[in-house]
Image (cartoon, rainbow, N blue to C red; front, side, top):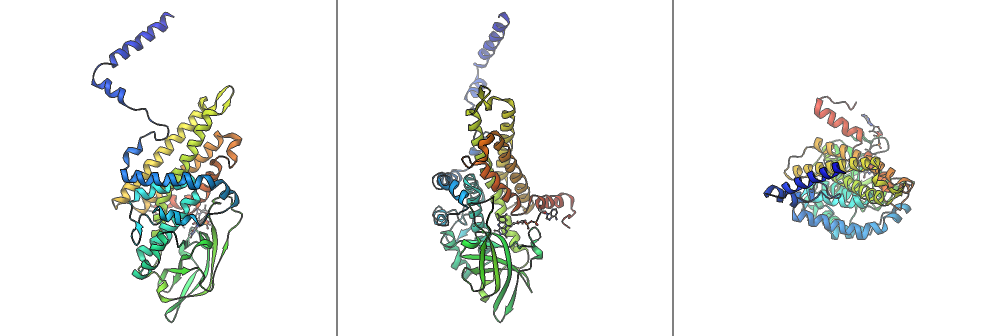
Length: 417
Ligand SMILES: Cc1cc2nc3c(=O)[nH]c(=O)nc-3n(C[C@H](O)[C@H](O)[C@H](O)COP(=O)(O)OP(=O)(O)OC[C@H]3O[C@@H](n4cnc5c(N)ncnc54)[C@H](O)[C@@H]3O)c2cc1C
């Protein structure tokens, strides 16, 4: 008893000491870290960035979350929602002119994060539309091509897709078989593209094919004779997203369908670099959704007479998740600021893609375990995010390919072949 009093007395006297002076005032005024934004990353954003982020977050809350369980369950993407994304200014938002919002890279990243907190299918939609379909037209297209396509794509009236992967060439697209040959002033395009997001719902396909002048990009509108699509069914990942095969059977295209300003793999790879940047951010949105769900669940689920959040093993899981989620978000923000300064390299984007997708997938798996059996149903978002992240782990450069890119960057030795 006497001991306790002594301790309490000591505590009181320490508190008494602390109460005096300016240092004590500052200490008292210091706010406690919030579980949802532990490092106060909010303070690192500008007002405009916060405004764009909040608009995307509100839209996801109102338009994605109420429907996502059903869309995922039925394997559907609500095509009509494209116009709403266009109205919000999120399609091609990091491009300038031609009806695009001209936002900075950080704002684009924040929008990706909010959409992927809803579902990776929605983030995939804006990545493909903005970074893989609009970006090559904006960067490598003629003035006529830009005028014809970009404003309608920014409004979501025209949906685009990006055809690079083939049935036999995924990680090694430079060996593609799709080819285009000249026939007078026309081009004749033949070949098959596989795993193409938005394929069958797209009004315009940006297709990469080998030619005598190296790999070139072609704009192929839906309905072009010889161009057909077939959806890939029975996916267990990215179910709220359309994935298709594109077939080009001696498809005749006019001379002005080729992107004039690029030839070689630089064309498609520069698009992938843009989309990968969005993924660095997006997956932290999916991870955040998993973390928030698991934290709430752990505080209310009682086992052995107390909330499971009160067990040290659960706290360790939640704390490890907190660390990776905040480090990954900080990394995304750092890369975003570098991109806005014009000094972000493709290898640094690979660093972000490799780390953040890997950690987001780990977070999804760990949070799934916190929910026990409830974690395997669509009632909670976690297993949906986890399954989606398996696709994100593979597309836009697999985990292994980004490892090889970084390995080469630090050793100077290429280990792809
Ligand atoms: C849902 C979804 C949507 C997609 N959307 C698009 C799209 O819109 N447009 C598009 O063009 N593509 C798209 N893709 C395709 C995607 O980019 C490819 O799946 C990806 O590049 C991997 O190719 P692959 O599946 O053929 O695997 P492979 O290249 O066959 O790889 C199989 C495994 O081998 C490993 N591997 C390959 N080479 C090496 C090596 N040198 N060293 C070590 N390991 C290696 C890979 O990392 C992987 O683990 C999509 C894929 C999915 C799943």
